[in-house]
Length: 248
View 1: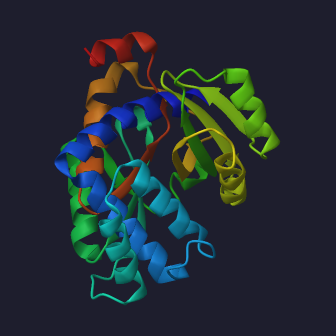
View 2: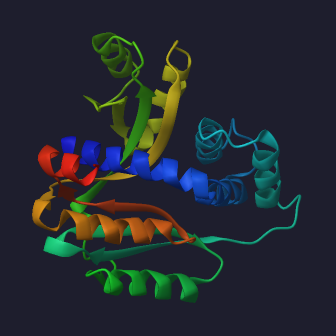
View 3: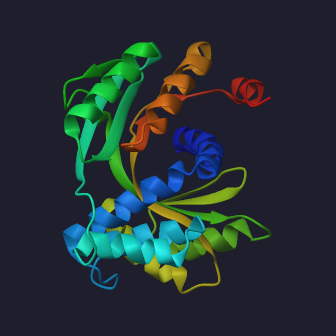
């Protein structure tokens, strides 16, 4: 699952930049509102809300912001109503791209997504064009610090994880889509601090993008920067040599 690991590394850097611009909090608030709207405000009976709140806390969102978002979702406070839409397209080298959004204006969102694809060398495609390339999985990340890799891996597998990998700064634990919440709960009972847990789309195969890396990453960056976009997935790989050059 190294392909996802490299893209994950890029997104960690992107996430830090988003936090500085305040974009990350906006995306997290939307997810909390929708989760509370669909499943209620009780985290014990609403796994999606529990996950959203956990992610928000890991990003150091104030509890007051979290509580307000939950109340907007349950209707206790007045708020905007968001709907989820998924868009599919292609980037450079035929790389498959999936864009997940939460929006209060579908027409605005699809126009922004289409424009961004076109402006940066990609194109929007019909629904179903590329979704088959991805599998839905659960991902749990634990910051390495001085933890023993074998010990963390065994704890993850004992908790029901499907796979395990090691990134530069994080241990990445993969689960079946339906098992994320049960694995997360078991790991939360251990001494390990969960950095992030989320449902993801993992590519079944990847395309080498060394020759278009800069342009492709620009496209993905611009898509993620759109206010209505929550997550972006793509099935590509970039060599360590090119990654090092781009991060300088």
